[in-house]
Image 1 (cartoon, rainbow, N blue to C red):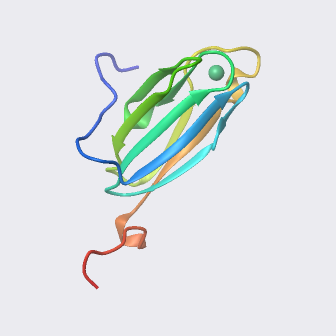
Image 2 (image 1 turned 60 degrees about the vertical axis):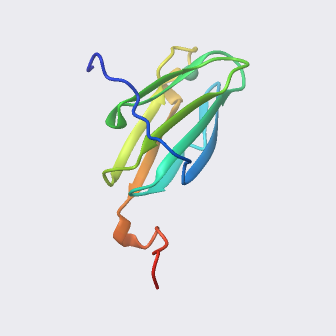
Image 3 (image 1 turned 180 degrees about the horizontal axis):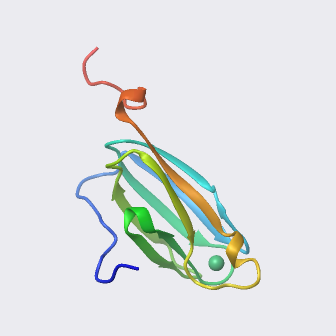
Length: 116
Ligand SMILES: [Cu+2]
């Protein structure tokens, strides 16, 4: 574990907004795909108890509390598959709360070119 790192952010509006729901015991959706270069915004809520969304490979770790909305913003810099999991122990199914964030290479055509 790396201390003193904060969830990264960016300025300006996001390119991609994904609503996510954490509940016993799943992260929905459990797979988020973002094109390289995209400003991504995750809008995360919980359906029951407190959970936490952690994506170690992207330096993301944020609590998700009942009745509140957690907004996580990051720039999809490096293509790859980044595992995510619940960072707050929430019961016997806690370990099942996993998923992944996939950043696809810009050359894959996921980003609409500005000039045709
Ligand atoms: Cu949990």
